[in-house]
Length: 229
Image 1 (cartoon, rainbow, N blue to C red):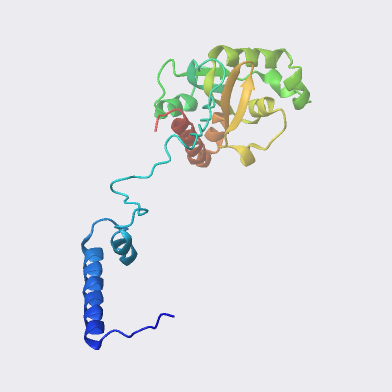
Image 2 (cartoon, rainbow, N blue to C red):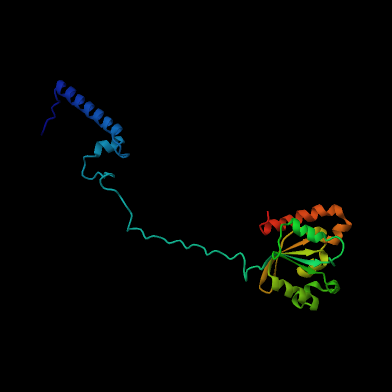
């Protein structure tokens, strides 16, 4: 039987002093090392062990181990379908006969539209006789066919419908202009896609000059849409 013999007192003091010096050395090492792992006490304590991983000398990488995932990019959607517009703005329902004040002409000039950027289509009074507006969109009468053919020919970016008659023909329903003026409606005739903007008729503005400001505010929206503002 082996009997445990306590170490002499001076030997115990020497061992405690040695341990204290070693721990101070470890603490100093953990504070001065640039390696984040080595700045911990545990890192400094076990760096000499064979299983210790030094991130500076043996970097860890997952390259080649984890398959890369390819993310499919969404294809851009076409904003404008069909052929490109041939003009910026088409004014439908013009009643100017070449005499008197051409209020529409003055408004077009103020919109900074130049020749070739706009067209004016006269008001066909036969359109006022259409009773079933919804059915007329599916099976248009002759006056409506002529109107649609002109739109398809000019391929405008924006159609400004002057007054309620043309507006209701294009919308296929009866609306009060006071409730929908200045709003954009996306429409299509054949392969021509355009934005429809109803405004008060110039004849109405001549009789009610206080509404000219309202009409001008609406037309400024058209200017913005075609890049004139």
